[in-house]
Length: 239
Image (tube, rainbow, N blue to C red; front, side, top):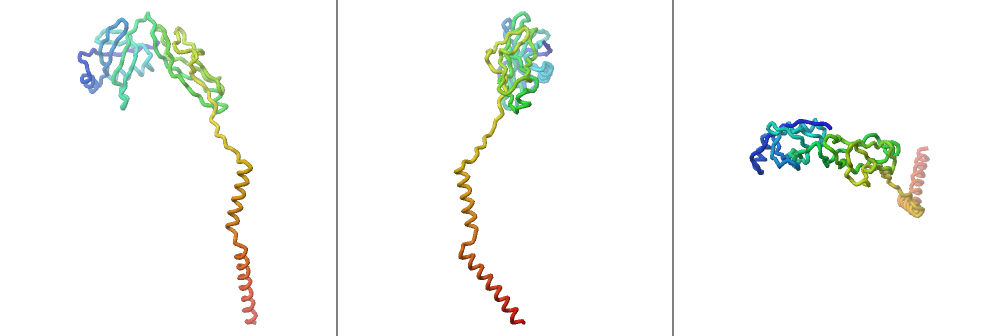
């Protein structure tokens, strides 16, 4: 299990006012507690905390916390963030014993491309992102890998299918971790014979409305004949 170091200082003032001043100075208020440790208010610099989290690649790493020169091993139990800025406003550290098992969450990492997604256009739906386990601090894994490459349409992986070395899984065995769902198909209904007949009848009525009436057609033909006769008469007079 990866271990990182983080320096902290104890806090002697408490309440919202001192906490706000601490944040304005670039620090994060925090507390350390545990079964064998009395709650101890501390603060860490925001820069050092970000660097430790980046080095740990998550929040499940063991942290060697140095408070005023005294070192203890802790894990992060909770991170509180500002709902608007997402800046860290408070951290809970849990002091641990290397000989006592811990209950904690580790991230699930999905690997491979599901066969049902690659060849059949399915959709990979993940229903769990973390796994609850119990293990000794030295056995804490950084993550648990779940290979989805063999999953076809309708196939799924459950908690009972997972294994974490040297750890006991606490989540319910029947819980679904990931499933490949069938692609969404939009069904286009074919028109019925009655609908086709109605559409053809409507087209016929439109064509009839656009055609000239019988009387109008005859008057137009007579007018054209009259024009031709007049042209012929003028030609005869010229001769």
